[in-house]
Length: 97
Image (cartoon, rainbow, N blue to C red; front, side):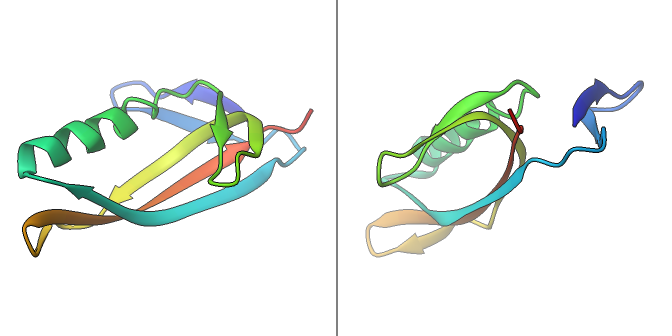
């Protein structure tokens, strides 16, 4: 796959070059003490939507090198007790060696 900047739009286009990488999906919940802190968390995640490959490390400590974040889909913010919660889904593509 190759990432191309798309003219007159926000973001990049992913084009297949015949060899497919591994698709990885991550889901979970972000928790924060207030909406401002939640915005900081989502902004930090969105900063990785840059079209560059990064190393993804899962909850078991396993490393997934050459991984590109394809999408980040946070759900609406909801109050949970005294905290705030946002469910999310992230899709990645790991390049083949």
